[in-house]
Length: 412
Image 1: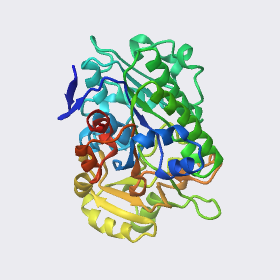
Image 2: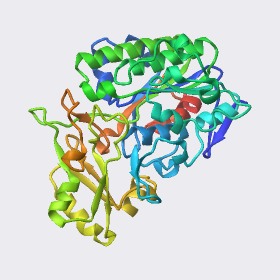
Image 3: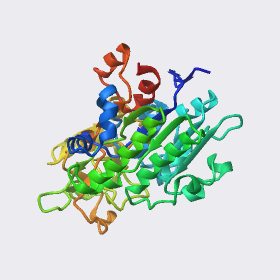
Image 4: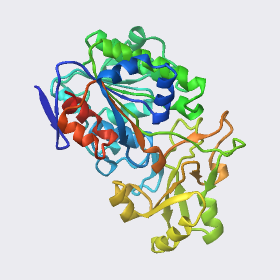
């Protein structure tokens, strides 16, 4: 089969292997600095014959939301993913959105596997493996999905592969740059072994949370990624590179996080009747303390939403406030999985609930985080020049979740 259709989009299958890389947390500045300093020579070679631009990610600019969008080619209103964490309206419980049961549409990966491609999804974070792998392990398809975080636990019957450590190396610590490099090394090993020819490789943003683009920790990390990009290119892969979100510094001149504790602020101004949800919350809060630039607010009395919205907009550091219906329409969100209000903050500010809810004791560097409007512009890179149709599309408003479309249909 030379093409497949999923979610009303058709993808042509090239003869060579396809590899899409999601460099978690990669704002454009990380690549600009690394390229300028000569730390990514293989990417330079890619760009000599390929294409580089920017794409707009989905809001909220969080990992689960955007990875789900990328592997389906659809915005959050269709995928059903509204954050890493949400208040379930059915149960009233605050829960992680880490399960495939939350996904409301099919994936490009499963469709490619059903079309006869040997599909591999390798993620750094285990939370994404289950979320994004439905349809990969059904009878008659060749699919695999595993994380670098739990590489040693991969089994044929549950992951489509076993013996990952013998193929790639020892399982790395999730709080490390190596967790991301391991993902790319796994992709290289799978292509070399002839076990995969349609890959999604999703990294982790541990390094970007810790280091600014010009710091040596970030440069060393990008140098390591570049080595693996060169190996994928050497294997003849057709590459697409993007990110789930960018990253911004969120601290003042003294290195103290610039935070608005929104639940406390609402309590002080209006009394009880509010619950603030921080959708950045996930199992990996060491590097951000569950502080991001996007929160939702649930009201005991939704009839006060306009009054509350107006007051929130007056707060220094708050840049946007949407009521539920407007948020669903203008931000492409699933209306039943957001609060009565959506609140976003400035590029240098994060939003939280109250100090006791956020453990910042393990932050060993000034806070860098994401989630809002100012972290949606991300790299959009392809290993070959775009054809005329996709060059014209790229001049409009390309989305990061168009990346498989561009790789399959847009490269000359």
